[in-house]
Image (tube, rainbow, N blue to C red; front, top):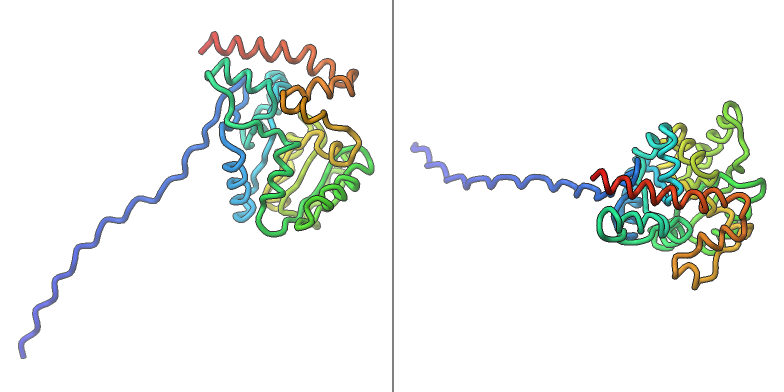
Length: 267
């Protein structure tokens, strides 16, 4: 019996190389790298982090944050591992001075977080930490009335001390099994807390949200829409809280511009 001739084997086409993710475009401003991306791109990144439960930290960077980073090695190092989003007219001015154009979008937390909650797929468990006693409860109610598809959980006010009290807060965060954690204890405390204590086990995604909880709870009134359109909300906040914010804005804004001018000269 004669063996049949083997059929010719078609050549196997070479496997296409796996598509590498596009490097995140950033712009260095002082000691921080701020993402130059759109809100829609940011939402996709956050949703991917929630689905993959990877432990993403998100911070909103304004001129004050750049000033703090210049004076605090710990804060600057913590921010190096976070997704830093552009917040406010100050960093847009800095971007124009250094890179010839503003950021693609102003992604301040007070507007971006509601946008994200409205666009997020499925139902999220969102934990709230920060503010004075009672703020997280009122903020959770405010968010819940606006975004009924998600569950907002009041975990703790912001007045907990290092040590046992911090450990108790972390226990409550883990018990809540949150998908997203909002931490509003002010710059730089909120970012340092997230960097030191919040990983994927505690929350797949965490945000440093500043005054967002106060706004949502109704403690602080936002600027009129026309002031927000003209990027003048910082003036409104200075008028409302002059003692607390005078140093940040009256002294801090010129200091920020001086830092950006030095960076431009050194480029």
